[in-house]
Length: 398
Image (tube, rainbow, N blue to C red):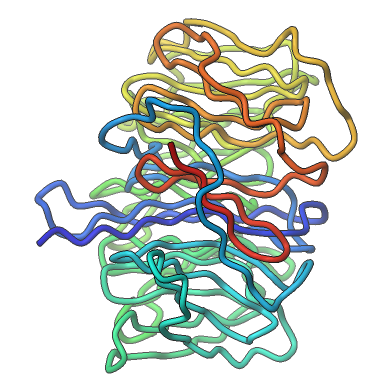
């Protein structure tokens, strides 16, 4: 039976230092599928992204939402404010989220809304920040530590110490990749089963965005926009390219390697050749791009700093834009990555509402007008939308 692990977003405090991203692999052969999104805390900025597959592409649910979603279920929780953190993972009908007040990871049944299990993590000096998963375990970072907690009660768990972890963990081909920083940074590959270091890359200007991985490459973008392709098995550098931008999100493996960011107060997307890192195409926006891209069904979605949603094709030509006539509410709005569900792309508009837009035409399908003044992270699971609030989880469905 296919087992699907879906990573959604949760959080309460959306301002501060660095961002956090997730990624995990998906298996097209009907085995385990893993998708990733973002985690935020009071120490992290609002750099969210939709769920993603192994190449950081946005995952598209089967089917589509045909009716306007309404609030159907809520999970209340004892935590409040910044103590209720994400992300949310749904595994075989169980919603799993990081809970710093409880000191670990909590699982709730999505049908009964009862707590079904907990996985404790004793990290008294640090908040649990970043998270990703394989088919067997969840990997969480806190301070200098990387934790493995099994999905099953009898699985292996370990803790690995290192330099302060400044990027989320990325699971790829039996390795957990992290960016670590203390003075000069390094990218470290840890064995997902044993917790032993397999290889590391020294003297890296580690950015707060995760790499993207193919079967052979680990693609990393540093603080100054230098994009490098490393051999996934050994960590040896295959190529390096200067993009001259501040990265806004992780690279995406689509039709080439998509790198996004800001340069000269404008937004930039570049498409690089995965063989040598050479630039194939580029696109500039009038406003900076300050979040991760969404990529699905040969379309690229980006939200600029003015709150306009852009849809581009794989050659970086504009297909449509949405939101230029939306009133801008500067109190609490932050750019968020869109989420693609079937034929609808959802995004948090500058009016603090969530907009559902037709992926083909760019026309509005629905607006959810109760988006909080301090935006809660949102994600999707099937045809449902998930919103994380300080007091719990809200589920919207047709």
